[in-house]
Amino acid sequence: MVREDSSTQGRGKKDSLNGLVHRRQFIKRSTAAAVGAIVSLRGFSLRAASEKEEPAAGPRQLRKRRLGKTGLMVSELAFGGAPLFEEVPTPVPEKTIAKMLDEAMELGLNFIDVSYIYGRGYIEKAFGQAIKGKRDKLILFSRCPLGRGNSAREMLEESLQRLGTDHIDVYGMHGTWMSEDTADRLIQQLLPDLEKAKEAGKIRHIAATGHQAPTAMVRMLNTGKIEVVEVPVNPIWREFLEVVVPAAKKMDVGVVGMKTLWRGRLLSSTPELDGPLGRSREERLENCIGFGLYQDVSCLSVGFLEESHIASGIGAAVRFKGFSEEREKALRPKAHESVKENCVLCNRCLPCPAKIEIPRILRLELYARHYGLADWAKSEYSRARIKAEQCTKCGQCTERCPYGVPAQELVLQAQRLGGGEG
Ligand code: SF4
Ligand code: SF4
Image 1 (cartoon, protein in one colour):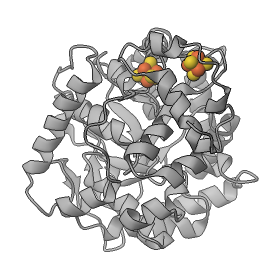
Image 2 (cartoon, protein in one colour):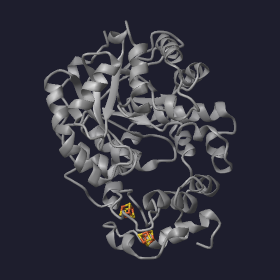
Image 3 (cartoon, helix red, strand yellow):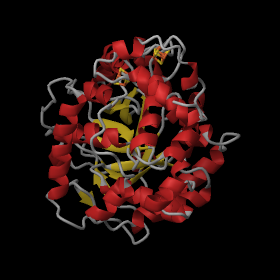
């Protein structure tokens, strides 16, 4: 059976951040909390928190950490399902997934992270086959999205059927590019069904996942119903580490990190990241996994695309014995500490009449200007479907922004990323 730390069940503090506040206040508070956690350790440490930990069963095996108030003890790496469909020319076959899972389990992995939407159900089905006969040794995490025309209850039933189980340990709301408005809709439309499913024993714990607006995730946390969040944890996406992780920890909510390797992008050499993360793929893997495990998280969800990735990914986690504060800081690209135009990625400036993804463009513009990541931002910018060059200067985004961000001005500056004047 999967072990739970029963002594902690239901002991989560009913704490909240009293609703949304301006980002600068937010950063002030969250940074203070984060700084507190780091300072208390003074120097070399396995990570910046006092998460309960279970030692590895062997020298090549993963350690386990407590998943917040759920009390579940999860391996430090979870098997993330999305890339098995989304990052390959053809979906990884079910049999290969089953073999990879077996190998990962031998190395101590006990946590699977999938979603109703991955591969239009293929991924849940493939893992359903892979876990046959070993369900009781695994912790399953899945979630359902908005806008599929069916209720959370119906989606959960499908997930249960595909996974071939009568309960899912952690099931949540799949926020993805979640704005604050989306968070409200998730809370209104999905959460009531999930609470009923929890009462009925079909799910054990409720989660929320998202990688757009940190403030939207805090809105979800403030319902007091969320027991696990999954958010980006890597050296580049700092917003979630600064805002969501400290808020979650205050409530004893388990944190699963995602985008640790950013779908492999952080493993490719780029001039600005070679310094902090290393030149070789191996160094980068070691540093990204180490950076993630150093943070105040329970686990990192990592996508393994082929069998060799299991040994290398898990090996990097097993080898991680701790960072000095200096080393962790060195892995973060140098940011300008007094950035004034802090876009919190709340999406409230949308829709843009020119269909520009304003928050995404502003993020890249910020990274290029203040984080010394110009080449990297340019390469990311080249993937944007609608570019800043399409801006008609209507001014609506600046007017709509409740945080005083000069959005139009910054969108125009971002034209430099495409080689324009900016
Ligand atoms: S100013 Fe440009 S980016 Fe802003 S809403 Fe108008 S067209 Fe979109
Ligand atoms: S520019 Fe303003 S409204 Fe738009 S995402 Fe950023 S903070 Fe939100």
